[in-house]
Amino acid sequence: MNKYISVLLLIFSSHSIAQQSTCFGTTSNGYIENAVKLPADGDNFVGYSTVARIAGRTYVHSKVNDIVVDAYHWLETEQPDKVYKYAETGFAEGGQFKPHKTHRNGLSVDFMTPVVDASGESVHLPTHPFNKFGYEIEFDSNDRYEDYQIDYDALAAHIVALHKSAKKHGVDLWRVIFDPQLQPKLLATNYGDYLKAHIQFSTKRSWVRHDEHYHVDFAIACQDINK
Image 1 (cartoon, rainbow, N blue to C red):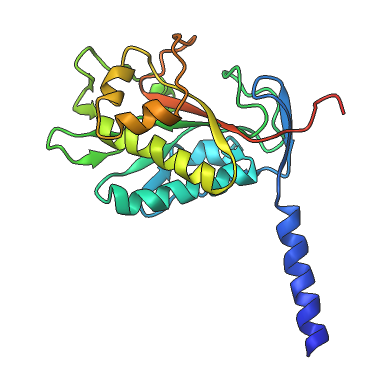
Image 2: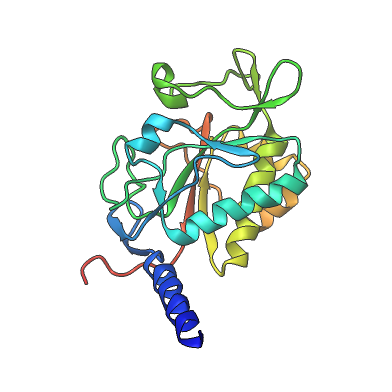
């Protein structure tokens, strides 16, 4: 019996080791081995597209997966009435990920901006082929798109959750890209002091606006791409 248990433990241990990812290079010039696919959904989150998931566009580093899922679990208590949606991540093997300039080594994740509807209820931004899976959405000067309005509290809470989860797993967030013109409203939330102390926001406008989504890069050590 003891021998049988030992064999089972060895099998499960080997499976666990096999699932650990190794990243190479940088987010803009790299690749990944043993990437894992983010869960399709959970109690308070969903992925942005079943089609994109089938196409293999939701793979990340195994540690990033753990961080993202743990952050959503934390938010179930911190923001129990809020719902979240993640978007593009990367391919299983990494490498070029059009139309993105990064997302190449499993350490980049896009998240759709949390919103509330006309009644103030937390809902998901619509993501489908006709709006480029959400990436074509543009909020106006009042933070509105159709009947949706940006939920800065939910957004700020999520970034805090990602940072706390990352630290729990022994790593950190490298940067968060979100429209610089909207960042003051994010920092004005109850989570503002924490964000100012712990999060590095990109202060330059990117090649796309980043209002309908926010881009998060995780600070996980990678192998040199030339090795």
